[in-house]
Length: 489
Ligand code: NG1
Ligand code: MG
Image (tube, rainbow, N blue to C red; front, side):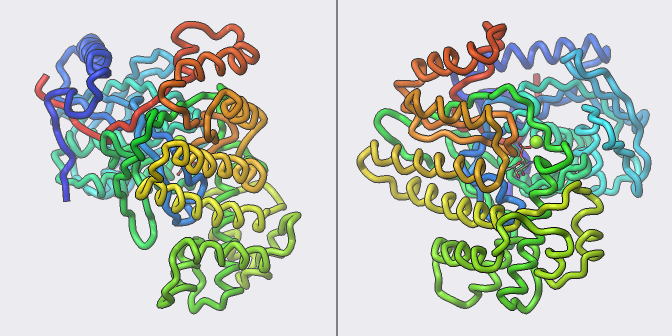
């Protein structure tokens, strides 16, 4: 049980090469805070974005994933007051206008109108989630100034970094005793307040990551995160993030909708529960596995291989199912299915591709295990490490593109270009439909790799992009550490 740490120096969490740059950024935030609110902040809270190395769209199916925190984060300077319970939030980026709201009591906490894309909603999410738990009669009033540098809509989890940081400001302002595990669990539920029925990968990576390690996160039977040491190879492994600069929009209705994928996998799990005659129907594929193989001595990868053939046999219709066909296959009446799975997060489609989604999920869960096995017992030949990890990443991209339909032409193009430019593996990261790719590259080849991608992708599609903006679109990253609070400046 570790409470959320408070540091007085940036060295505790940032890589050496990064401290000076971060120091300047924090100083600018402090200065701007004083200009804005005419007082000094009491503390600074931060949570990073993440890149997912492998395991896409399986967190909400209950399967383990392997993200790592990146060195981009959301930082908030905060002053508290006992005079009122108001929250004032401003952003150093003038694109986001200053907002103010008041505490509405233990029942309501705060109203979130998710019908529009409003930046302060993400602050309210963390605020509401945390105060729902804390049940305070009179939480502190807060003055908050935000500085985020995780690109929005890029699959690097700017939203989770934001919600985790805002939840952390509430903890710190009100001196709540809270562990990192509790912060993570609250942030996961809290982010659903903005209308996405998300899994828990992003919040886990943002809060729980440790510097120098990727993070294996499991969700069923309960949240569990274990740091994973990446293999030491010659030359070293480097992960390069490249943004397609196509903004992913998870809220779009129709077949590219995130919540639809959640429905397709949850209802799929109900169908398999029935087909496998489980004692009690469950709505995540991981729980289906746990129940079906309970008491049998079968390794997880064998279980997943078996489930791949079960899914093939049960979901015979590869063109997709209607609502009534799903009702028949799951044994749950249509009205119930709609009420339980399509009401809070509505979906607009008549075709549910249970077969393709299930095959992706079981295959991807298997690849996460295989990736983890290579990390735990890396072959002594570095080339083999690259081949194996890269191969799994490429298979993941193929599956995301063909079976889960969460890629897009730009992601397909960029990952193909990355492989041509020497990456051993390249895949989309995050929800997909735009946003970033992650590529496994030999460290000594990174500068050349970046130059090639700039030439072949960015110059072609975004010729107007230069300087910092271009450097921001493609960058190598190292595993960074999770949420933290700073005081004593
Ligand atoms: P991004 O794209 O970072 O928002 C989303 C979900 C994750 C996970 C991935 C796909 C949220 C907050 N996060 O990530 O939980 O399901 O997609 O693997 O919606
Ligand atoms: Mg997000």
